[in-house]
Length: 212
Image 1 (cartoon, helix red, strand yellow):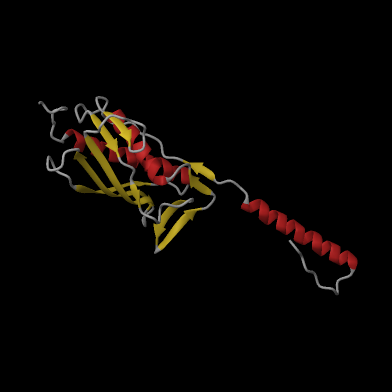
Image 2 (tube, one colour):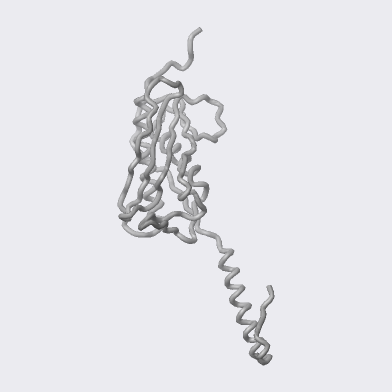
């Protein structure tokens, strides 16, 4: 990088100015190279529920583009997205939500094999869980919010309902720290798993194999 200094400066002053510019450039480059703090939501245990399909696939959630970015969206308020600078999710947000929802469902439905869409599993699912996420951050009032739609349906078209249910989950945030927000979003994902588990148990039970 070339640095141009006024010709009128005498030599000592030119050296001092050059040294000052070098320090500023080095500091700027050092700041650009700093690694973000990585966060991930965690599974939250819930009430164990008997019954449900034998095998369930959790499809990778569809996440709105405003949330699907490198840095964590802290809050959506006053027509602005507040970014938690210096932070990032540890993996793509859709994959993360799908992974944790899968773990939460497996804990709640111990008699069911639950796997995520991209898992290397050869077993054919008997039911599917699909999720669209439009909010996964703090809302206008400072509450953690998980908003979107949930669809739980069997593998046979025309048998049982195939409806998208609205998701509107919120919880109070006692402070503005990022780890507090992530913990709250973990709990909301657990509440979503409670809803999905109940809907899976309500699906019609079909025989595993057709008779000749």
